[in-house]
Length: 62
Image (cartoon, rainbow, N blue to C red):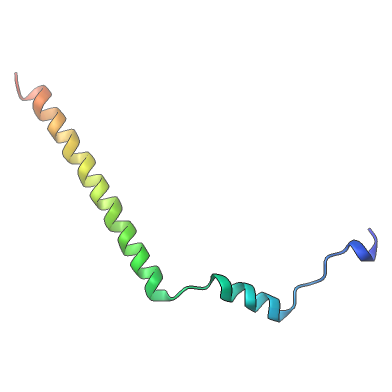
């Protein structure tokens, strides 16, 4: 491998710039997690309600 084809090592400034680009506030992450948990809970509740309704009308009419 020739020295010209080797990639240069990233400097501290480049690493800090890349990390700052993807960094987010802790409150934002907490709100996103809370919204995601509520969304999954509502979805699970809707699935359980649909299953109970289906069982009620298929088994309950006997």
